[in-house]
Image (cartoon, rainbow, N blue to C red; front, side, top):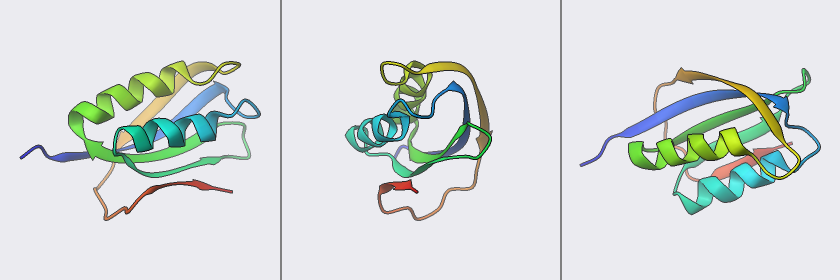
Length: 92
């Protein structure tokens, strides 16, 4: 059985006002990843993502790409403790 991985991501760059949260939600759901995404006051986007390792690798690549109009300059990654997330949600 493949174990799950949780990553907390801080996405830096031009990532607000370009549909980044919606893009992230669509990608996460397509890969069966659970967690959340929200805009931060400092202009970054914060993502909690949890799923199977291979799906998480694909998801991370998608986070670096972002939607049209986004420019991702850096992603800070921290491994977190897995939790019982049921879905992937946008936090407003």
